[in-house]
Image (cartoon, one colour):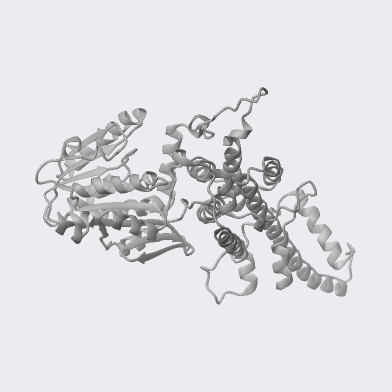
Length: 534
């Protein structure tokens, strides 16, 4: 086993690639020291080297043992087949057949085409052994290719972080030969990350110098590599909502929190920090209509900066108003065509009315207010707190994509999105057009922003539930434990896939894939201490 482990961890590099560029040679501290001009003392740098090494070891180990979720009583052979599905080569092509014949000849030698009965029986027994060895060879080959791809991707991230353009381009060329946007989940996610690395390289100022030495300053916003229309992004998001539980889980938990906080309330006003569609609201309307005390009046105010989307939103909401009316609910709807800012979150701008129970709703949006100084998020939270809402619902990606060092952020995001792509692989067929749209439009855009951009252009600043608890606590909020675990389990049963996992952490619900947390759903209220001060 130790010999196999050493083989899996081998980093096979082309002769053209510098062998003095191992993964552990550079650490995140050195990269960001070069990138941002920040200087650290020697002890800090050594700590970062140790952290970087540990992160890489953990990540590679996760590929060696891909499926800790499976029953531990499973046989070793079954684990081999299930744990390394990402790396098994396609046996349907001619090259695969040629390779299989080569392995057969190497293992059992020449097999005659005409045999006596005794010879046939011997050959049949040998063929079984041969097929077993052939499968083992295929698994080993796939594992080597997969881990080669992982190591090359990590080494390329180091080169990009160190602004070694020549080395990065050599490694990118190798990744293009190994990754495949239509391949297995590892090949697909690697392809997305390689595009992000290429984009990051293109944004470095030293890559944009005219012949006379003049440097062209390029903004990430003016060099948008995606060029994907809003309609396509909305379509991909809708597919993600319809085919996986990730978005539906967030809506369900947020709606349950709203219903829980607004019991007996006769008038509810929901402020959505960014509303691009109406997918969340039909379920909430039905839940409110079924209250024992009767349906309340309902107002929904949504912030939206997309002018093209405003008309479609108004059309969707007009249908929703009619549906709400059929349930006995008077629904009012308003769009604010600006981004939610502290200055806009006031009684006057939101046109709040006396007697309304105020709710703030944030679905995958609050992380976009996280800046490098964190002061802006605090301003937003304090502006919300001043309005005394009965609850603030927060649904976020549960992962750390806001670390100070590029390589650490790259490792974390690669692990996170690998789990998502693995779940898509398990729940949709390989050639699914829906899966391709979800990955290439929705997630590829997120990955590119996490990997390629810095400063104000990096808006996908996802954080862990512990960090959200600290930030919201500092903003004057305390968690309001969700009471919808049974509903969440019932919802997951609809998807008929054993890989999804559900857990609760200090009042927050976490939806994951095979133990890896993906989405956090939570609800918050103004803390009792803050109420006392007011």
